[in-house]
Length: 347
Ligand code: NAD
Ligand code: DAU
Image (cartoon, rainbow, N blue to C red):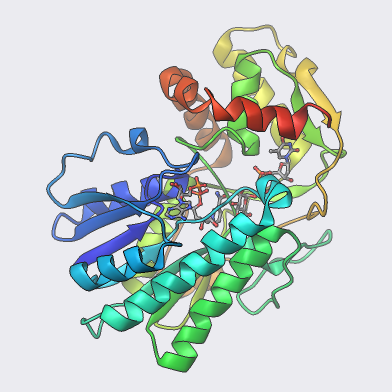
């Protein structure tokens, strides 16, 4: 079976590629990635020489390139992760999110519909819980929760989900979808809360907490997301959506304080050192208050379970960053500094 994984050089994509390449030597895995600021082949050095792995550099927005690739390769299945993924960047540049997340997804759907030859093959779209909008103090997102996206990022992901479903209904294209909560773990680009704050604590830089830090997110270890994708890929039903979450809700400020405590201890600094770096800054525009996921369908129908408790996962994540300073130095050089200035200098 030949599987195209898009966005495989990114954070979650690299974990999915690694899992599929290592677990299923009988599958041919092709990783298609544009290598934007978020894509990094250093995330995949441990598997790049494997016989069942190929990397292709390319842009999913480039229609003729995508058509040619699908015509040549006749993929059996697609696992689509390539996306612009950061909410703050979507607020500054929404059109880039429309191009990659919406137009790019439709290009892939068209090419797969035209060139697929395996009747059992399917298009698996990896999406986010942010499509459901925000929750108040109670309740959880179910697969039946109406879409209500608030940021340009979540609007673009909601649109791409709708296109995937529309291709299933209109053209009978076999599809699967999943909507996952916030991931954390190794190889996470330091623009997102956890890796940004790990990097800033290491460098004694302020920790910019948006608003009052009371917003709530449900955190899942990235390797557990990859295992859920594996489970849905192999056992999920055609046309269905599965919600994936960690049942692990934290206010941002409680999470940041836990991170500070772990970092002080790992860096051998006196207790309370990192917390002094906390700085409350202007809130994110349209900041969703709370996300929480009900994963009952995934757990009950096809038997997935997360493997790690949060504190253990966070500790492993910090250890990875402390051991991989070179990775961090590479991704924080050059354009990263311009981004950081633009986002935080006047906040
Ligand atoms: P990421 O930003 O780390 O990686 C995205 C990857 O896509 C990068 O390798 C990038 O080079 C590639 N890419 C971007 N534009 C491309 C294009 N036009 N053509 C080809 N490749 C392109 O993102 P991530 O956090 O790993 O997220 C992966 C997927 O999972 C996304 O679809 C995202 O919406 C979804 N998701 C993320 C989270 C999370 O917490 N990070 C949670 C739920 C769902
Ligand atoms: O819920 C799934 C989504 O989780 C994914 O679809 C997105 O791709 C992913 O980026 C993530 O979105 P969030 O906006 O929730 O993640 P982020 O790490 O940017 O922010 C987490 C919380 O921390 C959020 O409430 C905003 C806050 N925050 C973030 C940053 C970067 C801060 O307080 N300060 C910061 O500097």
